Length: 194
Image (cartoon, rainbow, N blue to C red; front, top):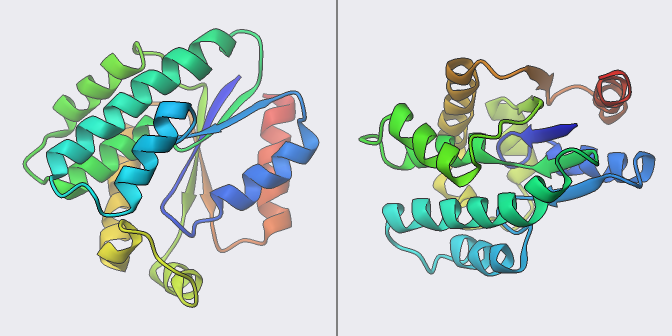
């Protein structure tokens, strides 16, 4: 099974992935960007403010995604449970939010090329509201993307929902305001039962 955890920063994805790591020790846990050696370098460029062009940012994400698919997803797709912290849904959503003139169809097509049109079995979409994002961002250092603001993150989240709807991918929406244990129960039940 190949699942992607999607959602904006502060929505609780990473917390839930840490919990799953204890339960499913034979699974492959990965992330985008940064799930490969090349991805680590790309992630650094994307988050430290080095990249100034939104188009450059888009193509760096696509390069990371193609490498990640080739090195991590494809070789393990039929053998292992793969859990990815973000994937192409984020890629399209952030790109669309950054560049309004990009249309969803073109962005989706570029991302399909990067992943050989190999869609995940399920997307867990963590949904946060303005209050949650504000509370969770306060008191911590923000990376270059988080500095774009709460409205920006909510726009990204809206675009994630639109992309999932366009592609008609199986999606389980997670209310990020629920307790950690409640969310964990929902996810574990799905992954165990399928």
